[in-house]
Image (cartoon, rainbow, N blue to C red; front, side, top):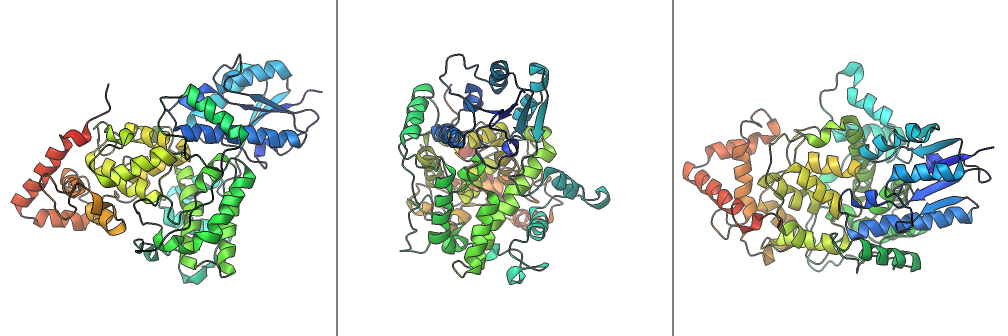
Length: 518
């Protein structure tokens, strides 16, 4: 009797994956395929490719150790078609299965591909819901519509409260633990002088990972990033150890300093678990429950634990819901009509703006920057300078090891650059250099002066901020959250306004904004 071909994608390295749940080791075959299309649809950071391929190879070994038949296709295998559809078709020809079972993917383009497998192979294809997430997409759609279809705006905070109630996380009956849903106001401290964050646990590459690293260097020499510092977890056991390290060593101070930035401190007190969650090595529920247990046992304060859980139960689930609710049209939105090309400095790290240089160079070396660097440094600059959304989204999807379109696109397109016109956020996250100076030490070593607003040595964020307010004054005229900066702009001396706009124009026409060569 023919068995089932069970297809597992590179970000689905989860033992409890829906497609594997009723697997019959005697009849079924699991297909994992490394394909060129998935490595190059954007020019992924080298560490991202190593992470995914190494995780896949380790996961295949773990399945085989359990007696599961695995059909594993390596990137350099002879006959590799380079596409998922091509490898599914070849596997069907090899194994003659009665059907194909797979799990709902993380990107719209992959779902479109999956939906063509049945016609291409002539056998039934079952696409199962991905229940590794805490929010079912059908539930999210119903929540987004509201009672009687009357919800006019989507807001994460209200979604988050519903998820707290649904999961029981940090709840006391029907009320939030501590009496408040959100402790964000307590989580905005700058790193204190002399406070040295504990180094996160690293996972040196084993033989499998080293083999993948050599393959990536040979096949993708022109891709962004370096591999010297690669130390990401590539197995479930390593991911669980990384989570335990965070809970014990960094979670207690995470809340206080989650918005801080500091030279030479890329991690601070952050968790470094998003790569593992997004690749399927770590359960988001397990992350939340581990943090909650730390609070209940007195090992971490409530503001830290709530802030961490909100990033997962709130933001992570919310952006996935928005992605699948709004795609495919969402990716093409450009509400602010931004068209400026991405500057070459975002690839080279060669810029006099220290905050940008810090973020880009760190990203090149680690494939990582924390959420404030992504939102309030590179994202804020892209917003104020009017960088092309398609190019900005491609950059964010390219350079981070935890980036998959379902999570990258709403965070970048909506939160960072407001290209969706307010679907994700009620106002643009625009800020002058004062914010970066308040939350970091970057400005101390910058060629520009954060205390100056105009002139050649003034911090570019200052003039760009007011130029952004001026350019979009009419667009945000009826937005109450933009009323204060707009009122300040209107009351400003005309000569000062002109000087700010002249400084912004001079900067935007200068060498810092040179696009990529060629």
